[in-house]
Structure formats: structure tokens, C-alpha cells
Picture (cartoon, one colour):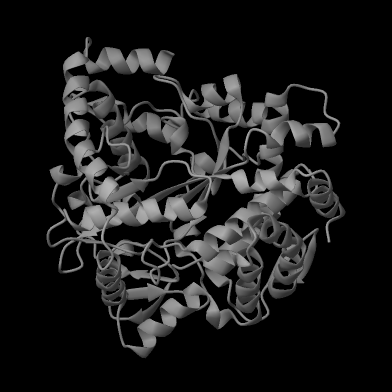
Length: 521
């Protein structure tokens, strides 16, 4: 077991600080495409019955107009976040008519790329900026990328935890700097070991052939209209998803907040020749917000991000530098098509103990060489994770995925035991046991189960996911929405539409001026 992890867990227990772990902060963001009865991408606008995508706190859109995004508040208990997410689904189902929410990360049958609708947010300056940012994404990466969905798991420790850990660490700097440095240590260890999450929870080994229409690829044909890799775990997180040469050049490995922030700051201010050739405004129409490596910070795609709630008009990187890291956002979670919400309590419990363990493990920086090894391990697992005998690189040595995974779970079992003790339950140890079974038998992983059901029931990708969509809709609607929640969401629908109208009416300058001032800030 990691000596550092063991010592910190013992300290937490001995000094009465372990109870602070019952005050963890959780939030969920879950995307899902709207699809029609023919399993095709919905061409309809964001339903007015769901409110304004610009101003609604809990139901919005992501990159495509058809890509719903559900956002929960922050809860101490992950179960409360899951229950809130379930009610958001119920409310949405009640207002979608014949459309469905696609319960998988890789998209449904896609039309020609030109027919994929980009999300719209109204005529206000901020709404236009959100739209043009997405036009920029289209021109840089293509619209197909804008139909991939996932789950973001937002996580933080309670404020009372940090002075205690700082005292234990004998750190004499500011609490803000200590907290940020600790979160970056968590992020570095997450990046070292997140391949394990891809193996255990990756659920996108196959996709609809329309996703790669007209493109060269190395996938195999599983059935008519379905492409796959036999041992893949998460094609969503492979180089089929969000990746490009411009972002690869950033080489961000999260050693320090200041270097992370300066790298992002440089990227949003450094022109990139291929984007310069696109132009910003052509024939009076915006093609992108600017010609820099990143239009805005959110364009940088990473499987985990340090985050801080921003103030009105504040850029994320400025918020991080001014007030430090507030929470982390885990972004590599596939939507599990077998689960009504795409994620369940056992997975949330495992993510909690995984993240706590990453925080309390040794605080090592990531060298350029290790960064390359991390990326190599990631690619091996997302494309070949269930391959018998697969090895990964650990300290320059090739080691068995199964043996390394088992070693990590043994370390994290002590974290699970402490969490079981403070929560007076067995959930966390049970979650460890569930994941160990997947290491012992790859056929138990979600990615293997997806392929098994498709093959046994002779279903193509679209048929399989639509079957799951209908099942989940029935399951969720079989239980009524919380009455108070229904009342709240009904009020938010009309309130959000009015808020959008108010924002549009309050604009005092034209969009060109607004964008120029924002970029100069």
C-alpha cells in the first residue's frame, strides 16, 4: 500500500477528521441527444416546454441544439444528485412528445454534417457569443464531434477539511494556495490512474457507421451500420473524439496552477495559422470568435479540469488565478446504456473513493516522459482495454493491466473501509469488490456487455441503444416526479424564458463591440 495514503488515512481516523468525508460536495452534468422515432438526430429546436437553454439552471444544451444537458445543484450526498438527475429526466420525458433521450455516449444515426443543428441561445450578445463559439468548433473540428455525449462528475472536499490537511502537511503558505496545490496533486494522480476508470466504466466500444461516414478509420464492422473494436472500452475517449494538433501542442500535465493557467492564457491569446486562414468574419458571417489556439478556455479538452465558479463576465482562468481551485470536474465518464441515468450509486461511490485516494497519495509531479506514458496507457485502454494479456507502462516497465488494477484497488480498499465506517455502511467496500470482479473477468465490464447484448440479440448499434432508451423511459416514468421538483421546474420554465428576454432587452452595444471588449478583458 502507498505509505503516504496509509499514513493520511490513519491520521484522518486518529484525529477525528474522517467525519469530514461525509461532507463531500457532488454535482452531476449529464448530456443526452434528442432523437426521433427512427433513431435519427432530432432536427427540432430545443423544446420551449423545457425553458430557455441560455438561462435555465438545470436544463440546457451543449454543443448541438439536439444535445440536452442536465445540471444538478451541489449536494453533500451523491445519492441526492442522482435523485435530482432522475427528476430532470422525468420532467424532460413529460415534455418531449415522441422524442427520446439517447442513453449512450456515441450518437444515433446522423444526417449529413451540414444538417446537424448547432445550439442556439437567442439574439442577446451573450447568446450570440455562445452560438459563434460553437460555429468555431464546427469549423475547427467538424459538427460530428458536437454530437458526442458524456457525464461530468463534479467533486470537492468540504472547506473545513483543508485547514486540517494543511496543518498535517506542515504547510505554512496561504490556505488558498495549499488547497489549489492539493487539488492539482489529485489531478496528477487521477491522470496516472484514470486508465482504470476507462477499463471499469468505459461503455462505448461500438458506434453508428454514420459517425465516420466518408472518413478513413481502423474500426471493424460488427453488423450492418455498426462499427467497433473488439476489445475497446471507450471509443468516445479515443482519438475519434475530441483531439487536434493545436491542442496537443499545449502539453498540459497539471503540475502547478500557475503553469496550467499561463498555458491556457497563452493558448487563448496565441494565433494558430490554420485557424487564421479560416478568418474570423467572412462575408459578414462569424466563422469563430478568434483565430487563436483556443477561442476560450472551455475549448481545451481534458479528462479532468480544475474549476472555480466564475463571477459575472469573469473568465474561468482569471477566477482560478484570483481565488484558487474550488472543485474538480471529472470528464471521462461514458454514459452507461444499461443504466437509466447512465451512472448509478455504486459508480458514484467508487469515483468518490478513487478521487479521495488520488488526493491522499504521494504528491509527485509529472515529467514529460511520464506524460507521454500516461497518454500511451490511455490510448491502449480505450482501444484495447479488454485484450487478453494487455500491458501498460508503469515506471518505464510493461505491467499487466489486471495486476496493476488489482494493486490499485487494494490500496483504495483502505479508503473504502474508512468511508464505510464514517457513513455507517458497506457501499464503498462493495463497490471495490464489484470493480475487482471486472478485473478478474473482462466480460463483466460495460463495454463487453454492450457487445454481448448486440451480438446475442442480433441488434445493430442504433437498435440496441433505442431499446435501452425505451426501457429507461418506462423505468423512470414508473415513479412519479417529486411534487416540489415538478412545481419548481414548471416555474423555472417560464422564468428562464423571461430572463432571456430581459437579457436581450438590456444589451447596450452591438455584438462586434461586445466581442471586442470581451476578448480584450
